[in-house]
Image (spheres, rainbow, N blue to C red):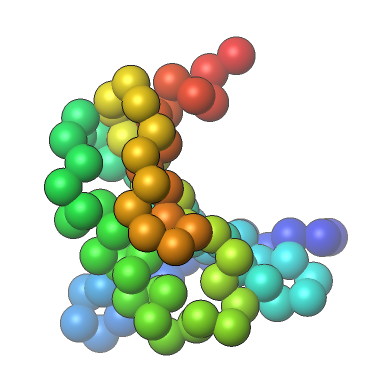
Length: 86
């Protein structure tokens, strides 16, 4: 298998819903939120992942229920769930 799927939650309840890891150990963090707002809270766990795994984190994405993608820093994006619909 080329990609491993896992979940991350720390003892301080910092969590990332989905982490994809390729064979080289590079990861992508994914959060899924039902909200339509983009206030940065959806990136709390992703920011933690970025801080603790900077050498291997390639991207961090928060899917949310709005219309426009928004960058939230280096390799951090809020992306509408509608972008995933066929």
